[in-house]
Length: 147
Image 1 (tube, rainbow, N blue to C red):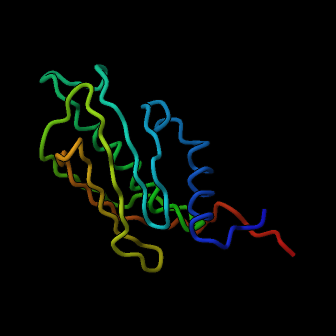
Image 2: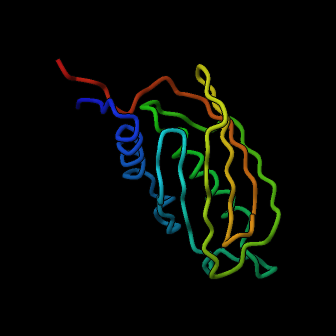
């Protein structure tokens, strides 16, 4: 495969390659709404199966949405990258039927490490703030086999 030289095309190709094998994200009904170098926006509707004993969205699902947006944002440069450390602060509860949107943005990328912030919201309300630290595995999605 000839590796795309356009940064946006490369980001899209990397997202498509990840999406094809990301069965957990697909199973939870997440959708990629935007992808660009160092950025991703993903959405998910809170279903009844995602609610806890308080009748609100279990924090693990909110974390998973934020983590998935983080993963897609940091894997936009033809480098396979994983989470090194993540933290989340919950600000409001998610509720059944809410459409949660996670916007991930790159804050810093140097060497094999990166820092990304993800805001999870519903309508105009911020539900949670997530920070992810990434680490490159030193492997690529695509090798350039062009002559």
